[in-house]
Image (cartoon, rainbow, N blue to C red; front, side, top):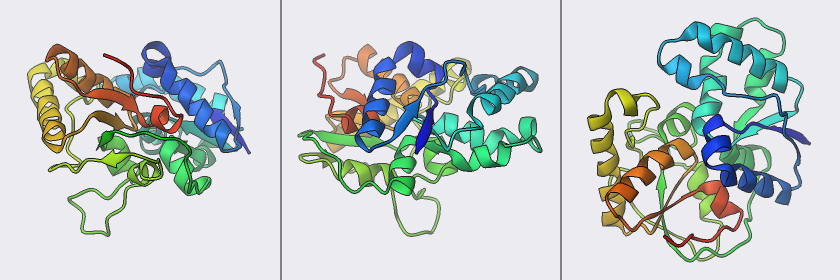
Length: 250
């Protein structure tokens, strides 16, 4: 099995260890990884602000770069959601696009749905709060959204529960938006900040020591609020926990 590794631009530029941790996790489970150096942004920021024609060439390039891989894996639910749910207006009818959508996975769903991972080595003796990011949770169905009357499930939580020593905290509102929303955090800064602070209060009341998620963008937003308000919560992407990273000193 060969996987084309898709690393979002903000991870590449700001949080490279999340990409490295993703590689380590996949290799531990026997996956042959290739990182195509031609890859670039998926176009989500432009699409979210209505710049469709600026998004189109990036979608076309993504198809050209990744269409021949058996699977494409990415440590970001929002970027995978962009490919699977929002590329149709740019790529519908193009050769290989339907197959690419079916073969593109967020990291946690790849581990659960394709590799059927039932064991993750390591010891992480911390109280961990899981933030269920909107795109992954609702568009990729990484978990059961609270507004739906369906049996509960959560693929990210299921993987975290495999790690020795971990304690997952229970939130009052486990799938509420953090307020990031890409350019929403710029255009509606005050509302975005209030939403993020609400999420942090929920985690504080639950006793969260380490805040994690499958989307670095959400974590980036909340980490900024944590730093500006001198809070003691640590922030780690799930791939870093799976890879055995330890909590960094603040």
